[in-house]
Image (cartoon, rainbow, N blue to C red; front, side, top):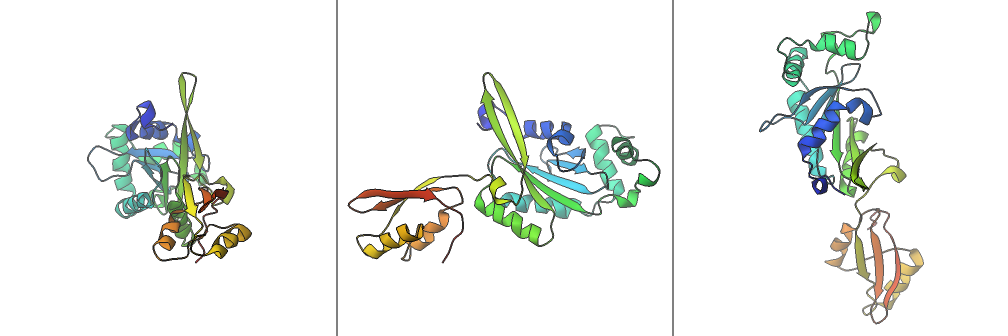
Length: 252
């Protein structure tokens, strides 16, 4: 199911994540310090790890698109240079306590004492970006891999919504660059093998286990195929002669 199916808004997902972030993001322990306010250009969630690194979250009720990455990176520009006092001010707004002290709260949350304690200057030395989406499309996966290859700490948290009996469940999974752990949107396509124009094209596809297009206009359309898509090969005068699963690798 989707969050919309169960009547949830992004705010509901934001509240769930911010209140239980240490349970849901298994890669590291995090402490929520801020939630987005209405009609403000702010990230959905800001959090800190035990070293004081800043984690910037962008949440979506729907599947991931590469534009979501641009949005979370935009927040990096806005908050990546925030010093301790600015983070402390955000934390006070989040806690609704004008006298709250982020440094002591952080030390208490992570049980940092003595040599393990960090200083105000240690906060926000590094930023990490996370998009939380209901599935990933191929272009978003490629964009994440591109930014990671260039040294940016960016990942995705993929969630699924299930209805079991009369109850709803949400499962969260951290994105991994390992191919078999990725979640893709999938579709189904029927591809004409161009048999009426060139009989060799059909044989070529069957022999090489590929879905191909040979002429302008059709070559551009085949770019829509993503990893996990089901493709049916249609031979004119015969019908469906084969089907397979796209690997997401476009060869020109």
